[in-house]
Amino acid sequence: MTAPFSSAVQRGWEKLASVLVFGGILQTVAGTIAVAVLSSLVQAGMPGGGPFGASYSAIGINGPDVPWMLILLGIIAGALALAFREGARLEEEVAGVV
Image 1 (cartoon, one colour):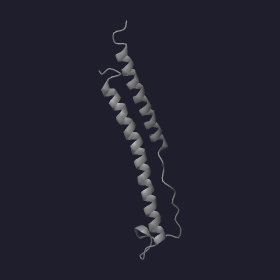
Image 2 (cartoon, one colour):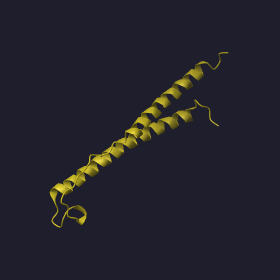
Image 3 (tube, rainbow, N blue to C red):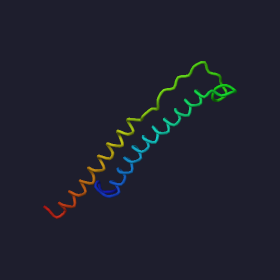
Image 4 (cartoon, rainbow, N blue to C red):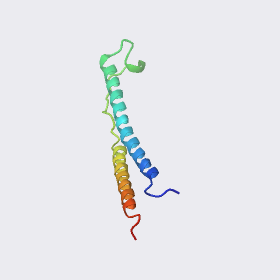
């Protein structure tokens, strides 16, 4: 069992925060690229029909989804990492005080 303010716990919270935030941003970027590619394919029109071999009378494309919950949870995990870092600092300060 690890101590609650150990460096392993702090690294875990920091890794979780970075994965959630950067993963959410990466998902948004990938969605934006996908929407841009599909929009350009539909607007350009292809000689053999629309994209993917179909003929479309109309197509609607929504903007990319932004995973706000992942990003928010990443920010919260980052705040917890800072709290654990501060807890470790306080634990070192009071080590000899009784």
